[in-house]
Length: 293
Length: 233
Image (tube, rainbow over all chains, first blue to last red; front, side):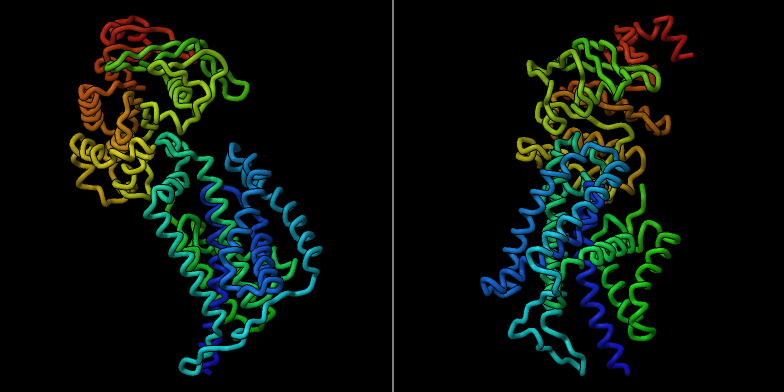
């Protein structure tokens, strides 16, 4: 019994890491630009399909192809930004949220249909030689691909944190998040920072998508699911604290698994939404959210 | 050094500045005073490029500042301390100062500039590892000024540096500003605290409803009857 519970928790945490990674991407974009990109899940889906194609057509290992997938997503991100989002950078915060949501919903439809045409409605996955192998530790099974997913998520998070803490550009991003006018007065090109943040968010969606593909599967309709999870986790963890966001993801994953185990699989989705409501009611700045000035 | 010539500017359909002309000479300390909503902050926004102006011209050391984007202004040697300090609260004092020397030229001499700022504000050196959000009001204002000085500006523009400070701190703040001016930094001081600003500055402009309505030596404006009546009581 203990083993089954622990096993369940382990799988939940590994799923949660992917929620966390996806949410860090959406939170990065939202925190800096105040763009609520509801097509984030579709970008994640494209990351999955990019990895799928590289595996299927060129036989490149899904983990080795990550840099290519990131590159692919950066290109998509750049096109979307220059074509659509750049028009909204001068709006007020409220207008930005409303307009980017509208644009985002439009994008979800377009991207879904592109995916349907290119890859059909079937679930796609990759079967590597190590796909079914696991590490056994104290009677708990750790599937290799999911462990790798957790590790890569952590590496991304750590790299992002270091980038934001140590580099001048990273500090410029943090400064812009806090006060774009003051940032622009010290000589930071706020528009460039916005684009950079958007691209980082897109790249993170790509990595998350690749990891979703190897651990689970992708289909043209998964976007909304991942956007919702990302939003829940972002609210759960609080905007402006990526470590908190990531931990929020792991909490959600673990809770969902526990719900499926102890209550019923039918309720696992409900738990996330209940979480969401409770946090909004009792701690609107998020579990680990920065206090308002 | 800085010359504003017949500037008109709008917020949407609302005209905020009406033919504003001003001049600041090298090494001067000039005050821009006037009541709330008169257009003081707007004038600064026009200079820093945060608000485009529709007609007129701004010249700084022979450079035309029209169409210069906001983030490039600091590279010309103009640095602004925004109203209320507005430091980056979630970052350390050190990081705030570092960001003050964001332009590549300033970045090269960052360490030197920081030494200079710490000489002016020793308190900031003591607090350098602290989160800016945990500083007191006076310290925040020091940090905001220090951050603006990190780009080694020729012109320092201060927007209401006395805002929200206790009277004793206001006095100290003005002493600091005078000291910075004596170090060779030209200062444009925007203030609601008219008496203090006029006593401190060599020259002053009075702005009301988006128009410059008076100009003169600081202490001569103090005896200006309408100003006495309107702002000094």
